[in-house]
Image 1 (tube, rainbow, N blue to C red):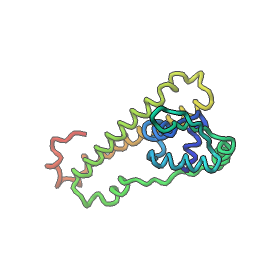
Image 2 (cartoon, rainbow, N blue to C red; image 1 turned 30 degrees about the vertical axis):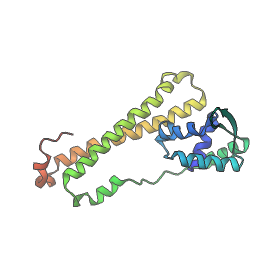
Image 3 (tube, rainbow, N blue to C red; image 1 turned 45 degrees about the horizontal axis):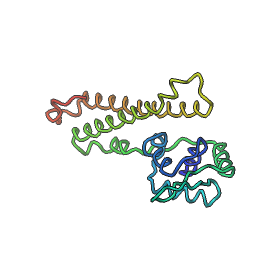
Image 4 (cartoon, rainbow, N blue to C red; image 1 turned 120 degrees about the vertical axis):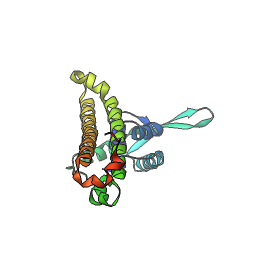
Length: 194
Protein backbone atom coordinates (compact mmCIF):
# COMPACT_ATOMS: atom_id res chain seq x y z
CA UNK A 1 0.00 0.00 0.00
CA UNK A 2 1.30 3.41 -0.89
CA UNK A 3 0.54 6.71 0.81
CA UNK A 4 -1.01 7.94 -2.43
CA UNK A 5 -3.60 5.15 -2.40
CA UNK A 6 -4.59 5.94 1.16
CA UNK A 7 -5.02 9.63 0.34
CA UNK A 8 -7.00 8.78 -2.81
CA UNK A 9 -9.19 6.48 -0.72
CA UNK A 10 -9.96 9.30 1.74
CA UNK A 11 -10.80 11.63 -1.15
CA UNK A 12 -12.99 8.98 -2.80
CA UNK A 13 -15.34 9.37 0.15
CA UNK A 14 -15.47 13.19 0.20
CA UNK A 15 -13.44 16.29 -0.69
CA UNK A 16 -11.02 17.27 2.09
CA UNK A 17 -8.48 19.96 2.83
CA UNK A 18 -4.85 18.95 3.27
CA UNK A 19 -5.23 19.62 6.98
CA UNK A 20 -8.24 17.28 7.16
CA UNK A 21 -6.36 14.53 5.32
CA UNK A 22 -3.39 14.90 7.70
CA UNK A 23 -5.79 14.81 10.67
CA UNK A 24 -7.21 11.50 9.39
CA UNK A 25 -3.70 10.05 9.57
CA UNK A 26 -3.05 11.49 13.03
CA UNK A 27 -6.38 10.83 14.77
CA UNK A 28 -8.88 9.18 12.47
CA UNK A 29 -9.23 6.10 10.38
CA UNK A 30 -5.74 6.40 8.89
CA UNK A 31 -4.13 6.19 12.32
CA UNK A 32 -5.20 2.53 12.43
CA UNK A 33 -3.36 1.51 9.29
CA UNK A 34 -0.84 4.04 8.08
CA UNK A 35 1.37 6.66 9.66
CA UNK A 36 2.09 9.85 7.74
CA UNK A 37 3.21 13.27 8.89
CA UNK A 38 1.48 16.45 7.81
CA UNK A 39 4.54 17.24 5.66
CA UNK A 40 4.31 13.86 3.90
CA UNK A 41 0.59 14.36 3.26
CA UNK A 42 1.06 17.81 1.71
CA UNK A 43 3.98 16.60 -0.43
CA UNK A 44 1.91 13.65 -1.69
CA UNK A 45 -1.11 15.86 -2.41
CA UNK A 46 1.14 18.08 -4.53
CA UNK A 47 2.38 15.03 -6.48
CA UNK A 48 -1.15 13.71 -6.92
CA UNK A 49 -2.29 17.10 -8.23
CA UNK A 50 0.66 17.26 -10.66
CA UNK A 51 -0.17 13.73 -11.90
CA UNK A 52 -3.81 14.70 -12.45
CA UNK A 53 -5.14 12.33 -9.77
CA UNK A 54 -6.59 15.12 -7.62
CA UNK A 55 -7.71 18.68 -8.17
CA UNK A 56 -8.40 21.40 -5.68
CA UNK A 57 -10.62 24.38 -5.17
CA UNK A 58 -8.92 27.36 -3.53
CA UNK A 59 -11.10 28.95 -0.84
CA UNK A 60 -9.94 32.50 0.02
CA UNK A 61 -9.28 33.15 3.71
CA UNK A 62 -8.77 36.77 4.82
CA UNK A 63 -5.23 37.34 6.06
CA UNK A 64 -4.19 33.73 5.42
CA UNK A 65 -3.24 31.47 2.55
CA UNK A 66 -6.12 30.11 0.51
CA UNK A 67 -7.58 26.88 1.85
CA UNK A 68 -7.32 24.09 -0.73
CA UNK A 69 -10.16 21.57 -0.81
CA UNK A 70 -8.96 18.48 -2.68
CA UNK A 71 -11.17 16.17 -4.75
CA UNK A 72 -10.30 12.96 -6.53
CA UNK A 73 -10.42 13.16 -10.34
CA UNK A 74 -11.68 10.45 -12.69
CA UNK A 75 -8.05 9.61 -13.40
CA UNK A 76 -7.34 9.37 -9.65
CA UNK A 77 -10.38 7.20 -9.13
CA UNK A 78 -9.21 4.89 -11.93
CA UNK A 79 -5.72 4.75 -10.35
CA UNK A 80 -7.35 3.73 -7.07
CA UNK A 81 -9.63 1.17 -8.75
CA UNK A 82 -6.69 -0.37 -10.61
CA UNK A 83 -4.81 -0.69 -7.33
CA UNK A 84 -7.88 -2.09 -5.51
CA UNK A 85 -8.36 -4.75 -8.19
CA UNK A 86 -4.89 -6.19 -7.56
CA UNK A 87 -4.54 -9.03 -5.03
CA UNK A 88 -3.22 -7.85 -1.69
CA UNK A 89 -0.56 -9.64 0.29
CA UNK A 90 -0.30 -9.89 4.07
CA UNK A 91 2.16 -7.35 5.44
CA UNK A 92 5.33 -8.64 7.03
CA UNK A 93 5.36 -8.35 10.79
CA UNK A 94 8.05 -5.85 11.71
CA UNK A 95 7.79 -5.70 15.46
CA UNK A 96 10.34 -4.59 18.03
CA UNK A 97 8.86 -6.94 20.63
CA UNK A 98 9.64 -9.80 18.24
CA UNK A 99 13.32 -8.95 18.59
CA UNK A 100 12.83 -8.79 22.35
CA UNK A 101 11.61 -12.37 22.11
CA UNK A 102 14.91 -13.33 20.49
CA UNK A 103 17.20 -11.42 22.84
CA UNK A 104 15.17 -10.48 25.91
CA UNK A 105 17.13 -12.98 27.96
CA UNK A 106 20.07 -10.55 27.86
CA UNK A 107 18.33 -7.90 29.99
CA UNK A 108 16.78 -8.07 33.47
CA UNK A 109 13.28 -9.52 33.59
CA UNK A 110 11.79 -6.35 35.12
CA UNK A 111 12.90 -4.41 32.02
CA UNK A 112 11.05 -6.84 29.76
CA UNK A 113 7.97 -6.71 32.00
CA UNK A 114 7.99 -2.89 32.02
CA UNK A 115 8.09 -2.79 28.23
CA UNK A 116 5.27 -5.32 27.85
CA UNK A 117 3.18 -3.41 30.41
CA UNK A 118 3.88 -0.15 28.56
CA UNK A 119 2.88 -1.70 25.24
CA UNK A 120 -0.27 -3.14 26.80
CA UNK A 121 -1.26 0.35 27.93
CA UNK A 122 -0.58 1.81 24.46
CA UNK A 123 -2.65 -0.87 22.75
CA UNK A 124 -5.48 -0.48 25.27
CA UNK A 125 -5.56 3.25 24.50
CA UNK A 126 -5.52 2.60 20.74
CA UNK A 127 -8.33 0.08 21.23
CA UNK A 128 -10.48 2.77 22.82
CA UNK A 129 -9.65 5.13 19.95
CA UNK A 130 -10.70 2.70 17.21
CA UNK A 131 -13.80 1.66 19.13
CA UNK A 132 -14.80 5.34 19.23
CA UNK A 133 -14.27 5.57 15.46
CA UNK A 134 -16.69 2.68 14.96
CA UNK A 135 -19.51 3.88 17.23
CA UNK A 136 -21.53 5.71 14.58
CA UNK A 137 -21.21 2.81 12.15
CA UNK A 138 -22.03 0.09 14.68
CA UNK A 139 -25.13 1.96 15.91
CA UNK A 140 -26.55 2.20 12.38
CA UNK A 141 -25.39 -1.13 10.97
CA UNK A 142 -28.72 -2.08 9.40
CA UNK A 143 -28.89 1.13 7.36
CA UNK A 144 -25.25 1.66 6.35
CA UNK A 145 -24.41 2.47 2.76
CA UNK A 146 -21.91 0.04 1.25
CA UNK A 147 -19.01 2.52 1.55
CA UNK A 148 -19.75 2.88 5.28
CA UNK A 149 -20.19 -0.86 5.77
CA UNK A 150 -16.71 -1.41 4.32
CA UNK A 151 -15.36 1.28 6.64
CA UNK A 152 -17.05 -0.41 9.62
CA UNK A 153 -15.58 -3.79 8.66
CA UNK A 154 -12.03 -2.51 8.38
CA UNK A 155 -12.37 -0.62 11.66
CA UNK A 156 -13.55 -3.90 13.21
CA UNK A 157 -10.27 -5.40 11.92
CA UNK A 158 -8.36 -2.64 13.70
CA UNK A 159 -10.34 -3.33 16.87
CA UNK A 160 -9.49 -7.01 16.74
CA UNK A 161 -5.84 -6.17 16.09
CA UNK A 162 -5.66 -4.03 19.23
CA UNK A 163 -7.64 -6.57 21.26
CA UNK A 164 -5.20 -9.30 20.24
CA UNK A 165 -2.25 -7.17 21.36
CA UNK A 166 -3.81 -6.53 24.76
CA UNK A 167 -4.56 -10.25 25.15
CA UNK A 168 -1.04 -11.21 24.07
CA UNK A 169 0.49 -8.77 26.57
CA UNK A 170 -1.64 -10.28 29.34
CA UNK A 171 -0.61 -13.78 28.27
CA UNK A 172 3.07 -12.83 28.08
CA UNK A 173 3.06 -11.14 31.49
CA UNK A 174 1.35 -14.12 33.11
CA UNK A 175 3.80 -16.56 31.51
CA UNK A 176 6.84 -14.56 32.60
CA UNK A 177 5.51 -14.17 36.14
CA UNK A 178 4.91 -17.94 36.35
CA UNK A 179 8.22 -18.97 34.79
CA UNK A 180 10.65 -20.84 37.04
CA UNK A 181 13.41 -19.25 34.94
CA UNK A 182 13.00 -15.90 36.68
CA UNK A 183 13.89 -17.09 40.18
CA UNK A 184 16.92 -14.79 40.26
CA UNK A 185 14.74 -11.79 39.53
CA UNK A 186 11.78 -12.64 41.81
CA UNK A 187 12.84 -10.10 44.43
CA UNK A 188 12.74 -7.37 41.80
CA UNK A 189 9.23 -8.43 40.81
CA UNK A 190 7.70 -8.36 44.31
CA UNK A 191 4.90 -5.88 44.58
CA UNK A 192 4.34 -5.62 40.81
CA UNK A 193 0.90 -6.44 39.47
CA UNK A 194 -0.11 -7.30 35.89
